[in-house]
Length: 317
Image (cartoon, rainbow, N blue to C red):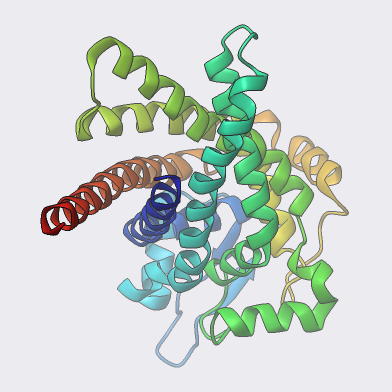
């Protein structure tokens, strides 16, 4: 029934978020550091502690390979998973909400968009976009905290709760929601394109060829993710810089979203808005593929388990 399907969606979404974030955590940290334009200096000698230097991105550019070396130099293998706990605490509930709310919004929007051109695409886009927006508003303090932990110095935070506590002491609730407008401006088209296009493409495939297997799911997820990432990446980059500025001695460089965009354009040109995009593809595309495959497999497993339990009950009766 609908209640069981909703529960299946919540569980599948939670598992998908947790699994995909854990498997791609090293790539996520490389991506965030590349976006922030922050350079972590090497340990100069045995008696010198690792120092962190904040550098304007236009003055000193760092390759993905260099960022990887820096992370390993500072924290070893564990350094690549710094902030993964915060990632999972946020990503699990977020995808659970997104996939669940998308189904609810689809039930409302499908009848309303039935007479529009490309009705299925429109309904899928807006149901996914609205689900992403609601989930993000509810969980945004966790997004802020996980981003700050990902770019933090070793020992800067004791954990997720400490990061949130420090932010609240520094600026109250407003500090924890810094960059929300920029994030929503990105998450609405991103979730609409990523999840909306995935389900629209999957529906068309199923009508033409039948059930989509794991390989087909992965391919459709890959295409959807690349399109969504490319279109919305500049907003993601601006959000990251707004979230991390002014934290624990980092300079405040931007007064808001528009100022951040204009500063990047004046310093680096149009290509500056796409700094770190390669690192982002390396992280986000596998994460999306893993999430879509995990959701599908867990939903199938739970549905099969439910049918088996129902059959056993009917057999006893």
